[in-house]
Length: 69
Image (cartoon, rainbow, N blue to C red; front, side, top):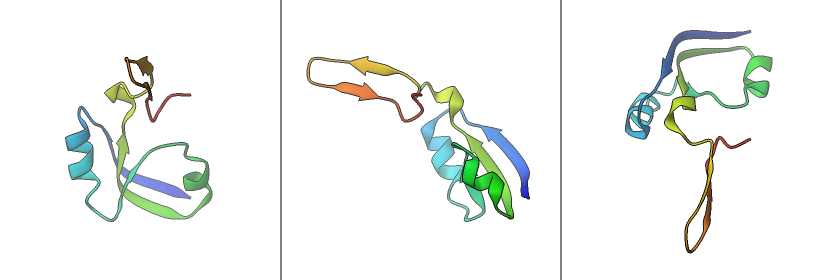
């Protein structure tokens, strides 16, 4: 069973990086494999509010955000 002690929706990548320095902190993503195991997570980090769910284009490249479906 997955047990989460603290859930944080971060406002910046710097904040996510600082929170993720602890070994028991995890960035949430997908969750299929996380839910299947026995694990205790001290801090669950949610990146969904950072706007990384879009595709943008400039003169040289397409940029696909890491949370783009």
